[in-house]
Length: 250
Length: 259
Ligand SMILES: Nc1ncnc2c1ncn2[C@@H]1O[C@H](COP(=O)(O)OP(=O)(O)O)[C@@H](O)[C@H]1O
Ligand SMILES: [Mg+2]
Image (cartoon, rainbow over all chains, first blue to last red; front, side, top):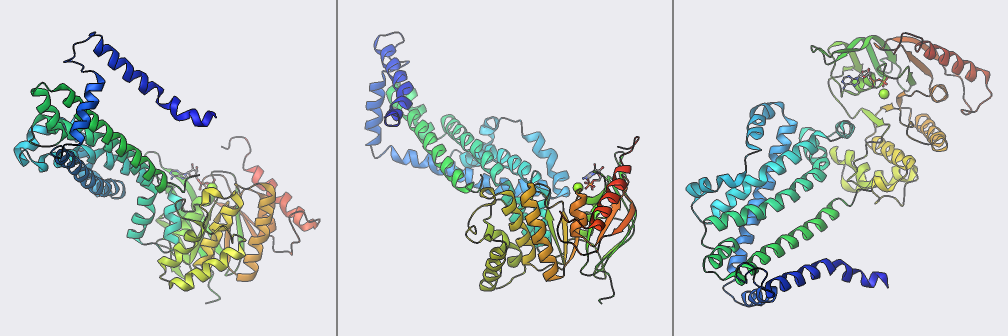
């Protein structure tokens, strides 16, 4: 009985929030411009979802995010493993990484536009930059934390240098890499939307700005909700993937 | 060839953090020779360098001063002639039991079918059949250590280096594992270097017990314990004499003024 009711309880706070939103807006506590009633936003959302010209924007954003994150994952893991494994690489690149780490990557948006123009490349590059260091540092910490007895066991079983790196250092770092990847996933959405908002001619960020400029606030909110839904879905999918990859943990 | 010792350590001196302020002289003037097929134990106060000596023989920790020779060749790194077993098992946690045992065979490029055969055979001997597809986290401590030993035996090292392998196990499991290790040693004739702080265990398992001083570790005394053993709970007076003697000698290392 209790378990049948669980979904209801789970979504009660959301429902209350929705009612509050609708009530505040309908009662005129704030202007309907600043906060259009939720029902209007949902109606606008629906008409966007059935409009074929809406989807290319969704796919443009998704493609940019996926490409930037994927490149950052590959480069970040290679960078993190190299920093942890090789003293020479660490001496060469360590200071660069440390300098670059605290820089808010959104500060680089104008620069990426000068370099790559207003299309996909500038967004992909920005996301790559933003996700690279969280993934690289997580990988680095993961590799540094690998139990030396695992490395020694592998070595005495006949593993050479590359086997040690791949089979033990990398595999041992996977839990940390996944934690870094989750941070990077959230970062992807932040950088994606902010770069599209600033300068772009397609994508959800672009739509948000266009609707805002045209004072079509219900549509603008609907686009933000689309981003939120995508972020939520991506995180859920990620959690399942991570749970499966880490199924060996007790 | 049978005349050359399995392991010969001569004039070994070792410092951690050599050339730094925090350098620690850990081993000094170690002389040790282990016969082929011999079972020896290293005992001594905690921190005296037993593990370090074992790791140097294993080729995991590089040394500069002295000589460490295994099967006639100077040790310069790990090798599959020397298998290791650690207290915390050191199984690859992301691999199943079977995958762990297969790992060394894969690295040796043993054909798949033969590797599977050998791995399954070892797991049967370790009474782990039925647990092949379990992850280490799903096993008890004793089962994990049996899996780790099976993984080491898979590549057929002729020397086993064991660092307090039963130290994390409960008393019953430990005595079962001691029996099994003796059986492995008897039937395979491997050379075993066994680190323990359990004097009874050392006397029961080995033919010689090597006693080390407190840090910097030197060899204080070597006690011959090669008499026939019936069990750790034996009434044999030689067993009790050896245990009492070694205990006294180890305890002397803890006298006031020592760490
Ligand atoms: N990686 C290391 N760096 C510096 N000192 C170490 C390191 N490992 C061990 N030591 C020190 O060397 C000494 C011997 O350690 P160890 O060989 O583990 O002793 P045991 O196994 O006999 O307890 C100890 O004093 C320990 O603190
Ligand atoms: Mg030790």
